[in-house]
Length: 362
Image (cartoon, rainbow, N blue to C red; front, top):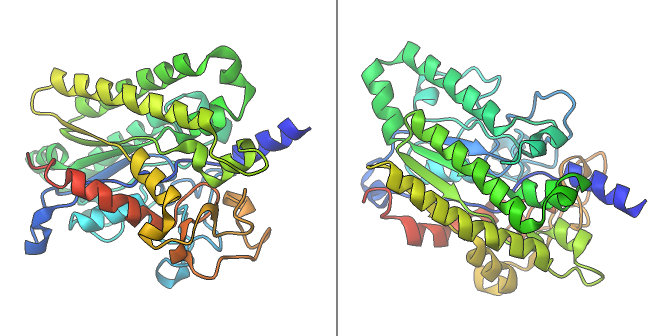
């Protein structure tokens, strides 16, 4: 019975924890953009609401208290109290303040030309992950991108569209659900693979996805690594024992993945002259924030702001289930049991910016 309850809870949990990104233009002070658009693929870290209209999925956040710190307190479908990583990156790059969802969104030409997000909370590189969550797969997102490009050709000259795609930042952030939900949260892959071979399976699919982006014109790709998955509040609750310690198995899986995918991405870059692929590691930075909250101005890094902070996420973090919120979201690293607060994302990004601010131009 305990396994069934945990499994149901895990199916409610979606993607990715703090994988904040790293491309900020140092010349932004002078008002110059180094990318014309940000085009995002992945999971809930950069899903601004693409899951809103998927019938049958529980992986949604278009209800209060999500968005409590978003302009006008609107619950847009972003899995946080405010902005998510795609918004923050687009803003820091001088592109626009909010990276909009693409699915079922009637966007103006300028919005299309400056980028969108195809991301779907709860998805993964493992094809089984989006099936378990009933969300858009990474192949679905490639299909949305093809549709998006067709729209671009109706509003701009062909040369401009090709140049825009070649110079845009393609942001990829996905993988947390594969480990936390599909592998450790269900019996399917756990019985089929050991963690070593499962990580290789994830990487095989990740490489195929990146190659698809390249074949579709991408020349600047930012690939976000996995955080310490075992230290997310929900994973502490489910696998950390009585004292809710970080789960070492999940963390080791994330570290193994990060090590192998970074090498795989380097090989892709070497196969395609002129291609820029930046692997953005966030693991150590997040661990430092979690272990040293005072250093970053946080008071709580082991629980989420919503409800008890132990397990609430998606529907469990709704006004129907709980009306409890922390007094000050800026003091919390995590908004719910799986996703950072907007300030949590910024804390991760500060380090990312320091390490990658020059990489996009070089």
